[in-house]
Every structure is written in C-alpha cells, then in structure tokens.
Length: 196
Image (cartoon, rainbow, N blue to C red; front, side, top):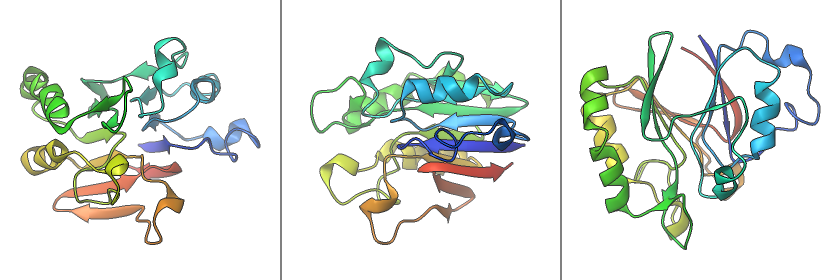
C-alpha cells in the first residue's frame, strides 16, 4: 500500500504545480495537521483514495471550515484495508488554542480510547501532529512531545508513528525517518511517501 504523508506546509509540487498523475498509485493520504483545509479538499477531489487527517495546533479554522471530502480521525482508530490508524492531533499547550493540550489532557484523551484499543487489538499506525517526548521533538516549550505517545509505542509496538510539527528548517539535524524499537518514526513535513 502506497501512503502519501502530508504535514505543516502545503507542497508546491502537489498544489502549485499539480498534475493528477502525481497521485497515481497512492492508496491512502494521511495529514498530520497544520495544513490549509482547501489544500486537503483540493487533493481529495483528485483521488479516489481516502484522505485522513488530524488537526495541528494552527488548525482552529477546521471548526468552521473542515477539509471537504476528507475524514477526521481525531480520537479514533480508523481501519482501512486492514490497517488500523489511531489519530491524535494537536500540540503541547503553549497559549490559548483549541488544538493544544497539557501532558495530562493528552493522557486523558488516550485513556478514553481504551475500549477502541481493546476491540481493535491495538493499532498499526499512530498518526499525530506532535512528536513523542524526547524523540525528534523540539528544545523549546512550543515543540515538546507528549510522553503518552512514548507509552503507546512501548505498549502497542505499532509499525509506524507518523507526526508533523517539527519543520525541516527548525533544526540543523532534521530527521525524516528513524527506528524506535519495532516502530518506524516518520516526520511527515511537507510530503513523504511510504510503502506499507
């Protein structure tokens, strides 16, 4: 399965210089947040593949203008062709915002998903906006990761953990892909394709 991952900035390759053939062979599109809802709607209109998304810390506008033709998987485990995808958007709280959470609030969101986790017997992909604590997160308070994500990785050992929030230009040693035990961690900044 070919998966297109998007996060944080609209890809000029896909929007400004769009050609429908660029989406050929893509089976699923996953958005990690902080993207213009019109951008996601535009891509959804040119593909038969589902476009799944979580919200980023700058996606307050999704309340009034959600991406049309796309599926929000916040606080859900969505199954597509046997692949279980768990969605948890938002960032660490650093100011007022509807998509910002304290460590405790994110822990509570995960706790409320216990029945889904039990019924689905875990998940294959963790799709978030923020990274996990201490794994490619930022040094400043705005870009810290969530500790509960580490717990999810250690407990369920998903094949992939896909996040955004850490832009390529934020760190000199930007890491796109790395291994954490059995899990491949991917920073979806702008666009990235994986084969599952």
